[in-house]
Length: 201
Ligand SMILES: Cc1cc2nc3c(=O)[nH]c(=O)nc-3n(C[C@H](O)[C@H](O)[C@H](O)COP(=O)(O)O)c2cc1C
Image (cartoon, rainbow, N blue to C red; front, side, top):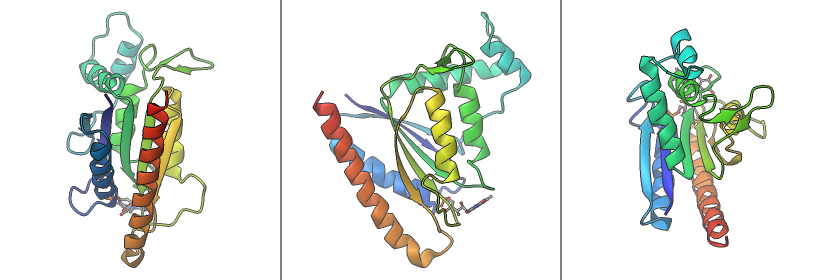
């Protein structure tokens, strides 16, 4: 049975392009996985705390003692429970939302999600990730800055199978309808491809 972890990060709970495309993804995923389990983590509704020196010390300690450790354990547990991850992510000031960065600071943790130091090895194997990104401006890069950053963060934990659904130029609403349709079609293609891939094993 498939388990999907959905992580949302737009500060908009109404009218958000990334969340709306995320909702579409979920509807399609549920059609393909009627018995599937979904875990939701909204890093805007419940803002993630920043890590501190105390948190990092606790990450390396045999007897962790920090208020952030319990949350870190809970978030990492969600990552281990799922085999698919959907991240919806808007661009804020050229980067990912600060609460989403704080989320990754809490889950990228030695001996829990990666091992080694000079050449880290990710410990979260066999997981598939989907990234829905949105930005007001236009990106001409193969991977936009949000996708690049999230790919690095996920890869560090061993998640390297990633599909991307970018929505750029959201400031020009006359083009967004067309762009949404394109990404909806990409979502269907990727979900079909992944379903075929997992049933063929
Ligand atoms: C605080 C803030 C900062 C933003 N910074 C950028 C930016 O640096 N580059 C950009 O292209 N768009 C920027 N935008 C526009 C958003 O990326 C755009 O509105 C996007 O559609 C937001 O995602 P959402 O529709 O899922 O909420 C910014 C928006 C906000 C609210």
